[in-house]
Figure 1 (cartoon, helix red, strand yellow):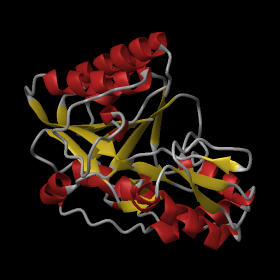
Figure 2 (cartoon, rainbow, N blue to C red):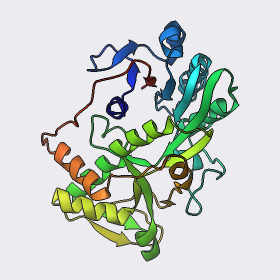
Figure 3 (cartoon, rainbow, N blue to C red):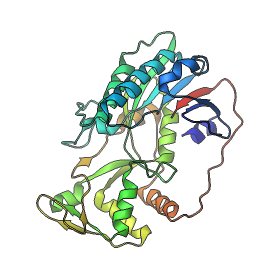
Length: 305
């Protein structure tokens, strides 16, 4: 995401929790609890991208870090778009497909409640002065191969189960053929965030690279991992020894609204995303994309991670 903003000639101001050196970025060390002490550099930015979250299911953490922290950050929003990274998990267990942004919330965990609360906070924030659009992005399941790829994502789980020779259990042949989830690659997500800075209409937007059934995901993982994980169909889909279970649901996101606003065209394919993940998991050396660091000072975005 940060590299994509640089490629588009933004000057990036990154709020980080610990003092780290990020080449080509201006860094501010802090968190949402103390963000008021960084009021000047944040409020001077032309846009704000809010990705910060403890990713907690504890009520206290969600209230203090997510809800109150986001409120403090919204107070500093003075210019341009405010882009909040929400989640498609706000819908709970999908009952039908495809899902559109007007679908009712059905939060199941405190993490999801935090996302819902943050979206409401953003929607209710007055658009005065130079504030423009308030954007809540609801990304699909992230399939990544970067440093955070093992942070509560599905690819590591599927990879380990495939290597272990497990069988994936489903409740019916129809479930095997249809259950799965929309996904988005890290690079597509970065492009989507950058594109969202040009949106003029406030609201929630789905972003995805595509859709894959769990069956397709396992088959592609077998291809690159050299594994031979199989499938079992059994009523109730309760796993036995040597078996495992993926979510018995179909989360298919309609991305029409975001595409119509931005012209976004996904580039990350399931095949390529799984290949990259397996290579990194095996310790294969990767290469970073070239970054244009010639940054005009008048384009500045604050990114909070």
